[in-house]
Image 1 (tube, rainbow, N blue to C red):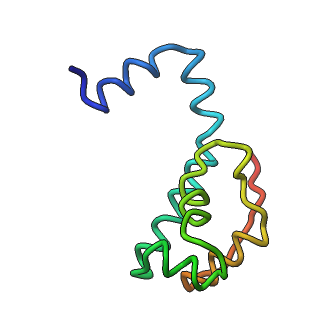
Image 2 (image 1 turned 30 degrees about the vertical axis):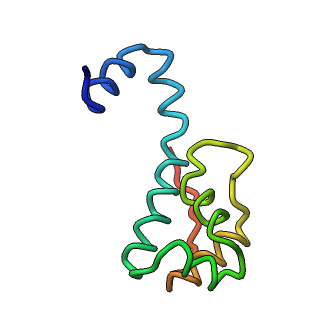
Length: 96
């Protein structure tokens, strides 16, 4: 049986799969930042949800949206989340 890393390496050796994976890198990075911010604040999803005025499943979806366009958060939602974990949203456009 393959480990997670071995399977990932095998799957990403396919150029088409790798191209699609790379397209999602920015989104995965955002969701990773959300999770890190919550962990650094020492909060549970339920605590963040309470501070945002929403429910725990909504926070779980926000943190794990991973490329699912149906759950792409609005800037307003990101601001609420950031405020709940003691952060602020900063958006930059960077030249390639």
